[in-house]
Amino acid sequence: MLSRLKAFWAGAGEAGAERIPAEEGRRLAAAALLVEAARQDGDYAAEERALIRALLSGQFGLSAEEADALLAGAEEAQSQATDLFRFTREAVAGMDEEGRETLIEMLWQVVLADGRLHDYEASLMRRVAGLLYVSDHASAAARRHALERLERARRGEEPV
Image 1 (spheres, rainbow, N blue to C red):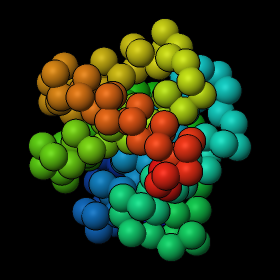
Image 2: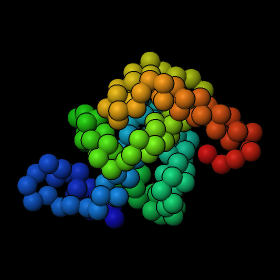
Image 3: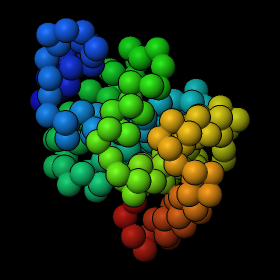
Image 4: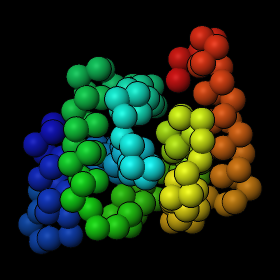
């Protein structure tokens, strides 16, 4: 799976580039955006990787091994990316409005996981919400839900 994902993103937009199933492309795009969010404050910690892995596993029903492979592919794709557009374009093409709002909530969980919002993280969230066609109102609601989920997870009431 990882090799197919890497080949897909390495050849994205090129004629004859290997195609992966739409669902895998959507998952990789979402995962790459989560990695981008985690890296915005300059501190991509093990706790953030674990949170992203848990979010991917829970949202997409992945096994631990599948989530690890997806995360590794996303880290590679994100490190080679020059912009966010390829990821947001893939997400918009493969997700309905509810799915995009869920992705924004997941992104909020990642940027708020350390208890503070860095200026770069806030900027990223505004840009990604716009590129995903998620309204400011819906993004604010997603932020509130993300904070509530993080607080419940800290108290041990629910997994992330």
